[in-house]
Amino acid sequence: MSRRPSGRGGGSALPIPVYSRGSPANSTASSQGLRGRGSLTHSTEDLSRQYGSSLSPASAARRAPSPAARRSVSPGQGGRRSMLSPARRQSQAEAAGSQQPGVRYITEDLIRKVAKEDNLDLITSLNLTLTKEGGKKIKYIENLGKLRKLQTLNLSHNLIEKIEKLDRLVKLRDLNLADNMLTKLDGLESLTSLQSLNVSGNRLEHVPQWLGKKLKALRTFRLARNCLESVSC
Image (cartoon, rainbow, N blue to C red; front, side, top):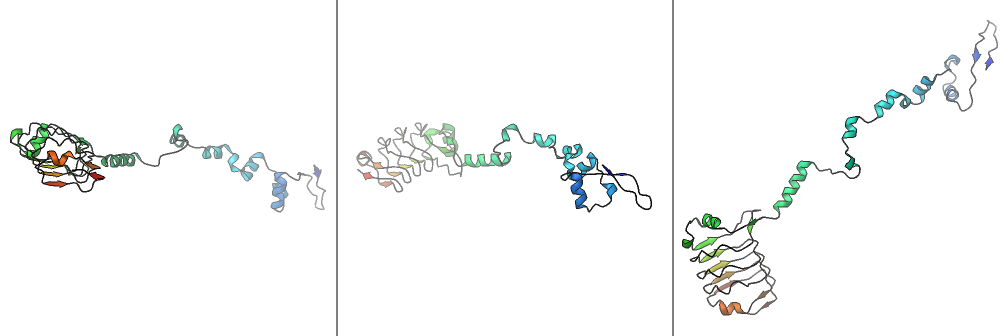
């Protein structure tokens, strides 16, 4: 610390501060053109305000995340987050479910409702084609044994994979099984009165040899849109 030499008018004897080359005050003084030597003295609070307001406790508190912001991220969300809202996920699940229709079973109550007849012995025609878009489909042929006078049966546009339980329908003349999922024609041997058979739009690969021999009353046989490899009628 050196003392300022006294001038003509009687100069002040206040000490002149001396700074090191790399000190913040020295760089500030050089950048500010040494404006007012009396302003070169800086406290720690002045340096904090000048060179980094983030050093103050109030600024640190402002930059810290709020408790609400910390709670908004759960521990399991540190990695990948789902961008879909719960409502959107539910709508997608419903859309996926609608592409796979459920199964409807053939019951006596369903038969009475569709045929509009309470007495099963009087039913001669039954249409079980459920064409409602996205509705339930029939997968199993069942509970038709009491329809002894049934002559026309429509089971098209369903999910039937196997022909079964038709042996008691001895008066059946017209059977429509189009647009199902059949792979074989087994189960028709006892339908000796059958005159019309429609199995178009299935997955048949072969027509059995016995078909023409046992179904002697058959006059109309439709089997378009299948995967036929051989016909042995």
